[in-house]
Length: 218
Image 1 (cartoon, one colour):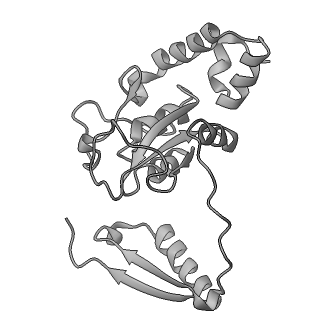
Image 2 (spheres, helix red, strand yellow; image 1 turned 180 degrees about the vertical axis):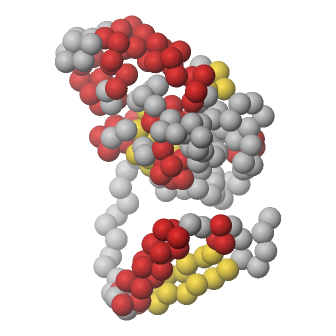
């Protein structure tokens, strides 16, 4: 059993079980989180103010109007932009779960950069009412956690349901497009090699693979 000041290391699912059997109190758990935030926020800068995590300006630029959020694993690196505060706060054990939104890669990228679990549900499966709109056809509400169990917990809270089981489609009838953005020339060797390997595996399995490019950047 963790000491009271170490409770922030637990996942939301673990905390819920301890609360249900009266092993800990909400006050004790909340105090552990607040103490950890106090110790770490000068470095990570995950919060715009307590209860609201930071995001890059207008969710699309690479800059904040306030202090830039850092990656908890290395303050000299980025946590991934956009929903950066949500991912950084979870990765740094300041909160067990957090919410975010994705238009392009604003959930999956910060999760990848910070080593957290994240879920970007099907578009419009969670209401975006009250959320500032950027692109109604792409904006999607999602969440971050430190375990799959916590993602499942949040999926239940938001009443997400599985689609009907998809029909099997022969790989020979499938088509995949790989789109290289204007930023693709900046990709590192590992990223380029991974994409090339994925394309080769798909082609060898009978999938039609097309590579497209945007003609120009924004």
